[in-house]
Image 1 (cartoon, rainbow, N blue to C red):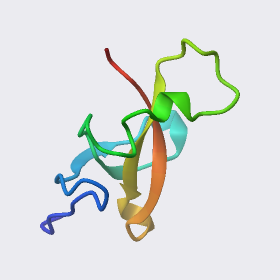
Image 2: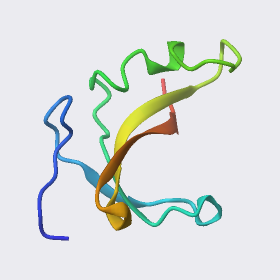
Image 3: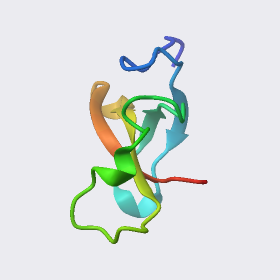
Length: 78
């Protein structure tokens, strides 16, 4: 992929990664900016999880799916 793609929420360039094999995802682009509006505070907005869970959301795009965007669950490292 030669095209630079950026997060529409914070403008940071998306990072290329592969989804876990058991997830069914292939190539993904992910916003890794911890100050991005999607990520910041997202651990408080996820329903039905324990209050102390380290899960949050990051903006992501499915490369093989035509760059369709979605919020990807991710562990928040503090």
